[in-house]
Image 1 (cartoon, one colour):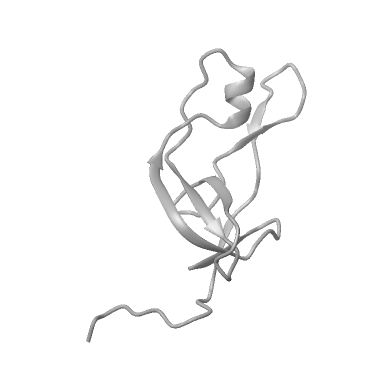
Image 2 (cartoon, rainbow, N blue to C red):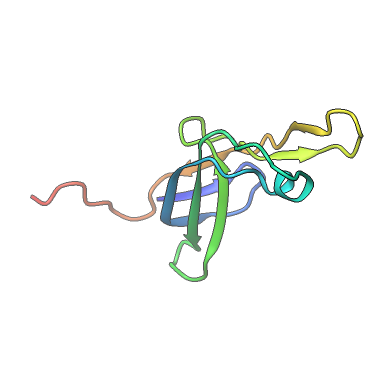
Length: 102
């Protein structure tokens, strides 16, 4: 399966998916002593469409395909804001997919 991000990176071929993760967002880990868990999300190991290279995407909700990552606006008040409006976009298969044996 091929995917790209809403920011235009990709396309990537999914090699491996880790589901149901609730690890804290990276910025929370850096900025908080005990960061809260993130909503359930997936992490993916990817390659380019030809299978070369290794890339990583994470913190996407598996149902909505929206990023659950958070970003910071730099202010002291409630500095955590819903981050990215990033979304994972599923692209049409670029090669046949066998779904049954016969």
